Image (cartoon, rainbow, N blue to C red; front, side, top):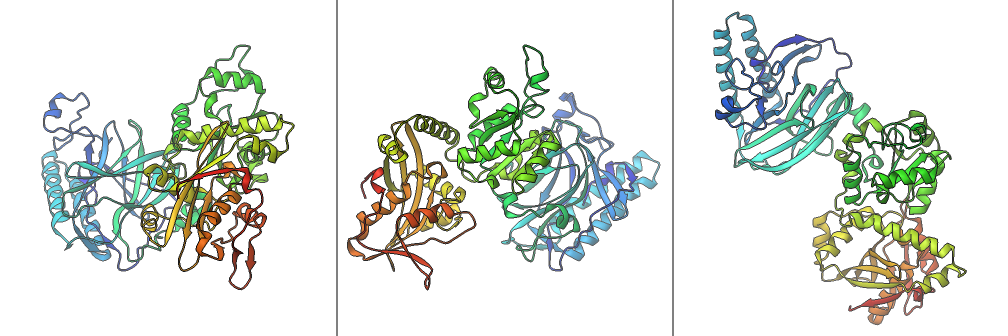
Length: 592
């Protein structure tokens, strides 16, 4: 329900309005969405705050025209234009009502709040508004079935944004303490979002608030803003809009590992080559913050730009951001070619890339050659940090990820300038693998990250939750280990996590390795270490390899190590003892 009593009213001929259909059995938390201030300190702020604007009931007006009633062909919606410090807020009681009763309450509120429009007396309007608002709050707190809701609760929103892309924050607070925060990205037009609310405490006063991520002026039309308890969490689809524009496949939602940036009109304002003899380029809004935050999250930044390399790299240095990029491709080649080169240099799949450019032609050219790559128009860059695929679950490496890739580039340069063969070069690098258990928190976090990020060098593609991995490490019949790789150039960090099972069979059940060390014979070295360390009581070693669309690299390592594939059990095995070729290229240290 909406606090329409203090707002104006209008009609709209808006087209393509989504139709919402909730399944029978859906439960609703009764709510009253009201106008509030993020810095509220009533009543003192009414006299002391320079932004105070008196509403008809004496409270502060933080929306232009209040919460406006908008009548459309699909029902009554709520229009809000946020002023500075404006927010929508509702109490979340420990009660729920049925779909039919929720519809009745909504209709009753719409009729009651419309009564004030028929009066021409401000005194009568004030009295009716005062009465309706207090009755509605009492209804919200006392109506419906009482009792703690053990099922998950979801905020279902459908919002029309008539302006430029923006975002809003959703917050939950219990007894004044924030317990949950998330964002909704709003493109121009209709957006539907179904967001699970966590941190709910049915036994304490809980508030939900919604506020824009800009200071003021955000205009939004709210079609739906309900907190629901669905009957089937596996099927959260309530409108035609969701089918057309909101259903994203797994690759759209999977974490991005590398963002490739255009420069002109994307990183900075203007065109570098047309900016005179001594150009002074200016970074676009939030670009520096975005680059540094992505770097801190362990997401790589690279460049695909049509410019002269030496002068452009000099400008990046002058702006203090050159160090944030790996494998920058600055030349006059097609950007699709440059993206292929970056993927090759970083040993990453283009499915894990996001390409950002301000020119539709360049985006289309890249998509034509690389149809699976994700792309983003540069107008959205101020909102990038709130996009879910740019927020990894466990960014344990952070900035070190970029440093590791830059050190790896130094290795490649030295190897290309060496007269040694590749294996001879590896031997001369004095590589050392240190293997230990996941007892340290930082090792555990990195192991969790590898399992959930690694694709090409991953036994099974298994994605474990943090809690599931923690429980798995407590199994007395198995052992989780990680490995750190070092050489004369520095450290690669923790590049391997694996699970060794001893019962009922001796097997390497899980193995995930960073693609930064692909081709360095880490797999062979690890297999040999497992055999040498634990094979005394076993005659056969099994591998828990499960073929996926993207783990062919580790399949190649298994083949190089001469494991036998049993077509009946579809399992790779080898008899013990065994000596694996090239495993001696890396020395091993372990106290296990």
